[in-house]
Length: 455
Image (cartoon, rainbow, N blue to C red; front, top):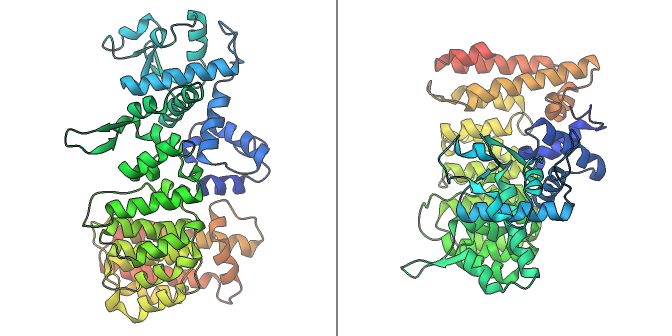
C-alpha cells in the first residue's frame, strides 16, 4: 500500500514506523495514506506531538466527496474541535450529540451536547465540523473523536490558547491539580494527559507535576518534547519518589520509554544506579532506558546485571535486551556464560534470553548446544514454541533468497545480517537443518508436538 501511495522505499517507512512506535497512526487505511504523504514530505516519522498535530490538521480539512453545509476556516475548525475536546474531558462524555437520533440509541444526557459547547456557532457550522474526518461514527446520532490522544492534545491546546489570551495560570492549575482530604497533592486523574501535554511549554506546570506525580511526565503525552534538563529532573524525581521499597505495580509503557530515552540521560542514570535503588520496577525502567536511548556510556550497568545471578529474572532479561540494542561486543561473553555456566542461568531466563539473542547475537552452533538443556512446560504459551520456528523460517527465507539472487521480502530483511554472515560459510542451509533437528529433539523430550509440527 505504501508503494501504491508513491513511497519509493516502503521498507524504510515501515522500519521507521516500528522504530517510532507510530503503529497507532497506521492502523486504518486512510491513516496510512496520510502517513505516507507525511513521509514523502519529510522522509521520516516525526515526533508523537508532530504526528498528532499533523493528524488533526489533515482530518479537519473540508470534505471533498460532497458539499458541506457551511464554510469553516482552518483556525475556526481547530478552535471548535479543541472546545469540544476540553468539554468532553471535563464532563467525561466521549460521545457527542450530532442529531435528534442521539437519544434513541442510548440514555438521554449521556452524550455531550455540541450546541451547548459551541453555543456561538450556527447549527450548519456545528454540523459541518462534526462530519469531518476528525470525528467517527459512535452510535445513532452520535459521533466521537477518532482517537483518545487527539482529545487529550486538543484539550491541552485549548488551555494553552486560553493562557495566551490572559487566563491566569492559577485558574489553569485549579483545573489540573487537587489536594486530597489527607492533604496529598495530586494531579487530577482525568487531567493527567492534559497536564503532561502542557508541561513542556509551561515551566510552572512542569514543576507542579514533577513535585506531585513525576510518573505523569513519563506515562502521558510526548516525553520527547521535554528538554534535556526537564527529562533529567523528571527522572530524578521519579527515582526519588518511587525508588525505595518493594513492588508498586508501576510500569512505564514501552512506547513512552522510547520517547523519553536520550543519551543526555547517561550521567543521571549512572548516578541514580550507583545511589542504590530498592524497587525492582525502577531498576527495570533504567535498564529499559539504557537500551531505548540507546545510552552507550551505561553499557557496563547492563552487562553487570545480565551476568548477576542474584538479580531478578526480569532485570537480567532487560539487561540482555539493552545490550542487544547497544550492539555491545560483550554479547558473545553473555552467550558463552549461558553455555559454560548453566548454574547462573535458570531455564526460564535462558528460554527468553536465547530467543532474543538468536540469530543475530549468538552462533547457531552455540545455540544448538544450549537448547537441549532448556526445559519448557507443555502449558507454556509463546517463548520457544512460538518464536523459535519463526526465527528459523526467516533465516531460511533470507538464505534461500540470497542463494538464488532474489530480493529479500520485508519480513526476511530483518535477517539480512545473519543471511550474509551464514551465506559465506560452506554449510549455509545445513546450519539451519542442524538447528531444526536439535530443536525437534529438545521439544520431543518435553512433549511439545505442536512445536515439532511447526518446524
